[in-house]
Image 1 (cartoon, helix red, strand yellow):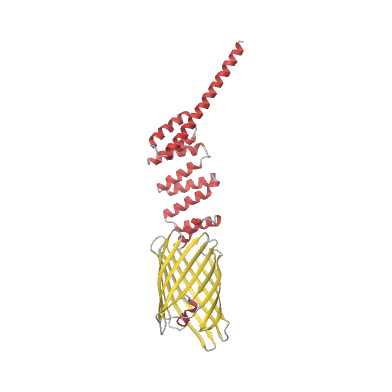
Image 2 (cartoon, rainbow, N blue to C red):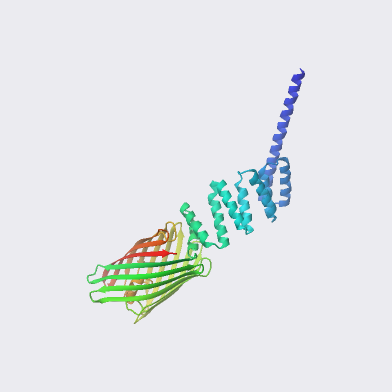
Length: 420
């Protein structure tokens, strides 16, 4: 009987102890839920910290309290104390990726970028499901450091892994125009005609492109050989200089000037446009062109609009050209589908009329400005062997060469650039 009484007492004691432990657990959970709610409602952080410390006394291994205390220390700008509690979590468990995230953010805010990078490396090893988050943080660090080269390199990798991430491509396109880089290139264009005794035309171009954080400078030497049975072969050269200059992070100016003493090119050509971004993914431009031949001069107003949609870029440019007090419009619609980098894309072109920017036919600009033409084309640009960029384009143009008379023109362009 004594043994039976002893067993009953012990059983009741264990049941009551377990009940107390369960009640304690429930109280700790309830307290945490309430404090998290207080935190989200921006209630007094000092009060939340004190109550959370009380919870830790009851359940010292309840790591959610450490995170909550750290967050509230951040609210009162005590980052050292916040880091202390986040590091406690990391030492005790690898099941709390938020602890690393908070430490990364504190290090970035303190401009301690090396420490932030170390936490990112550790976080990537532990939490493979959060790779994109850590890579995005690393991009942020590179941007804050002004290391456009490192940011662009990482951005290129991320675009390959996340081709549908529009924000990555937006940032990539902006960066790629500011990264220090030099390119030299050669281009050849052949234009043939379905009119007997006319053509072909051959144009060659040697090019140097210098890109820096302020913008881009482009120098071209163009050479033309234009054949026709009605005249001797016509040869000529043109010297051309262009520049894109950033005025803000996204807005920029374009300048162009070209000179030639040979009749296959205009004598002078000058141009300028201002490009302004708005509504995040839209770009508009307003500019002018001035073309001077031996006998005439032609001013033109340029209006354009462009936008990005995922991997696609669209641009419509219009040219309102004056000749003998008559306005002659020309339009060019261009689209690109980007593949991996800014140099890797497919593109298509639709156009009407002759514009001052049509370099291959610029020697006949004064004859063609009053005549109609319809063109369509497509091509590809592709990076090969890392440092080379190859390009190919085919363009078909149905051209009025005299009133009521038309001809078909077939233009093939190949190019190769080396970047260094």
